[in-house]
Structure formats: C-alpha cells, structure tokens
Amino acid sequence: MQCSSNNCRFGSCRSLLVALMLCLLFLWIASCSEDPEARFKRLDQEAKAYFARSEYDDALMIWERALAIRPNSPDIYQKIGAAHLRVGDYSMAGEAFRQVINLKPDAWGIRLELAKLQLISGDIGAAEASWERLRRGGSDNPEMWIFHGDLMILKDRLDEAELSYRQALAMAPSDDLALIKLAACYFTQGKLA
Image (cartoon, rainbow, N blue to C red; front, side, top):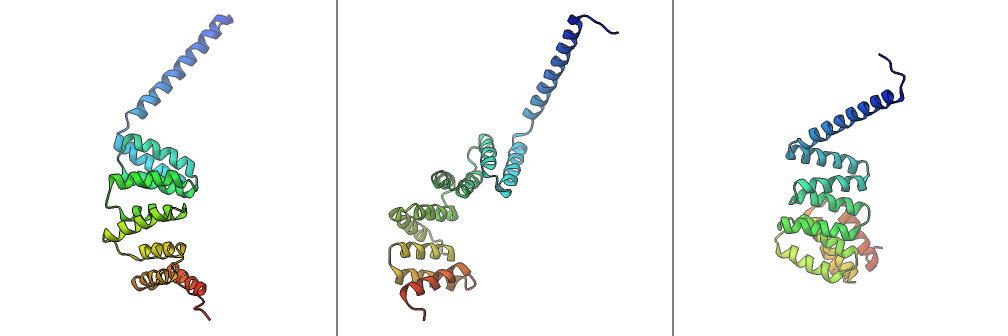
C-alpha cells in the first residue's frame, strides 16, 4: 500500500525513528546488564591493548571507568601511574602510586617507583627519606641499590654511589644498567684509564 500524502511519509519516518530509539534503548539495557566483574576485566583488557599501542590517554580513560567498578584496585592504580609516567605527567603518576601504597602498604616496587619520581622531580630530601623507608622495610634488590647510587650521584657523594652500584652488581652480576652506571661513576672519578 502506497500513500502519496506528506502525513503518511512523515508517519513512516516517525515509526522508523521510534524503532531506532527502541533498538538503542535495548542495546543500552543489554550493556548495563553485564556482570560488573566481567565488565571490569573487559575494560582492563581493552585499556591494556591501548597501552600496548602507546595510546596512553585512551588507556587512562578506560582504566578510570574500571575504577568506577572497583575503586580500591591497587592493580589499576599502578597501571594508571605507569600510563601517566609514559606521557610525562609525573605529578599524576605520583598520585596514582601513592594510592597504590595506601591500598597495599607492602608494595615495595611502587614505593621504589615513587622514590624515583621524587628523584626525577629534584626532591632529593623526599627521595632520601623514601630510600630509608625502603631499606628499613627489608627489601634488598639490585634496583634499590641502583636507585641509591643515583641518589648519591645527585648528592655528589661518588664513593657511596660506587659502593651502591657494586652492591647491585654483587646481587645481579649480569645487570647491564648497574655496570654502565658503575663505569660512569668510575669515569667521573677519574678511575678509568
């Protein structure tokens, strides 16, 4: 049946619009019915994919949505901190890492990352206090000693930096970073001929 009046054509457009709106409503309701845990995992995987492609802003946006589902996830805060580091937003990275420490006080790796951020930002006093907390916390690994060596370099205490880099190498003899830093320390002290 064909109708030539304008009212009839307008009516069919209205019907099409109503059908489209109902479809959109149905899709929205279906997405809302997703299990929160499944949605959290899906969002995390999606954000990881963006992060892997160096699309950090998109990853951050999706991890923020994941936090709405699980606001006390130290894992997501750690990933947010890492993404902020990649875009050079050290302040936001520090906030995310502090949140991880609030939620998981024994996260020595994050404490070390926060101490490195303090060192990068030039807050030597805070970095030194972080080093003392890390040392008292019982964590002892090459990465910590490399950090301490870097701290000592910035304080112009080259003998102590040398000892720290040696300690890192004693723990991990194949650690290229510690070896390079020790060589640079030797060079600066004039110990390389």
